[in-house]
Length: 385
Image (tube, rainbow, N blue to C red; front, side):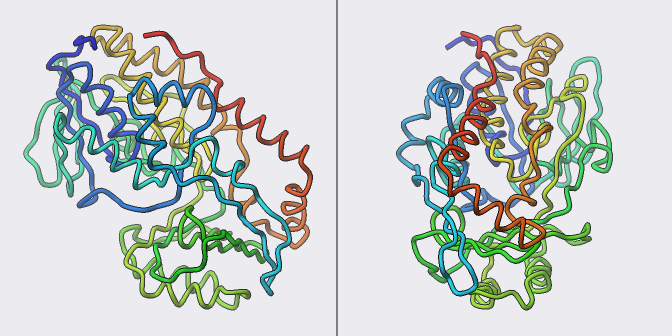
């Protein structure tokens, strides 16, 4: 392994998928990596994520984690569309939602963390408050830690990126709200091994299977709430799903006892650049599209490309960042042109629900959709670094 980046100091904001993936790739080239994460610890559980096609497999192989990812994979699970009486109306097959390899987000985050914990510094429960670029690096201040200077800073801190706000502009200028919210809730109640999804116009609730114990999507005006206040998020779900049929009252009753609730908007990042001086954006911070189906694959490919371009350029961030942006701009096109996942998962009318369910009754339509997603997943020519 080349040691082209020996003693290069890199600060990464975010310890979900993209951050630890980049830390792993950079550490192999000799970088001095620090990862700062606002949460007090790794976030366990979460929705399953998937990888598909030659590009994803190549990156997982070159990162040396393909076997471990396969060991932890959940396997795709069919999702049954049901009516209010629980009768199956259609089936979304596991190969459509699960790709070639499906793994729970929390398992992937822990795998990447364990691969990097001994070679990289992790700072949990802290956040960046300012970035000041100078000739020799970026001076960074934190909420709790003492100020430090780094050669480079990378924002891998999600669609609501703090780094992007500090270095590129306010979220209102970088992110488009798409009219829906989603929630993932870890539950103690077992709703069965088979995924079931129930819809009423503008609302969807799903339980069972490995995707997430409870998964909600609903249409809404923009909401003002604290994304770190679990009780406030539970109250939003109570209001949004009041009066809904099927097993929804039972699901909501289980939600009331949960300590792990994550509710967020369905949004799309809409910026025309991923780098600014010595600061770069990675994953959802740069090219996020909530529930678009490509987020984790894009994050891993982006982490690999960014690290390898830095190594190939001998640490010259101007050369490396420009090439990273050129490659990822094309590859991430799907997130800018894709459909709103909210309208697919929670159609706004009975006719829209029927049409969505009907799509999966015909093999040729499913095959066509899968070919399109496979094309997007492999739409990058990886260099032989």
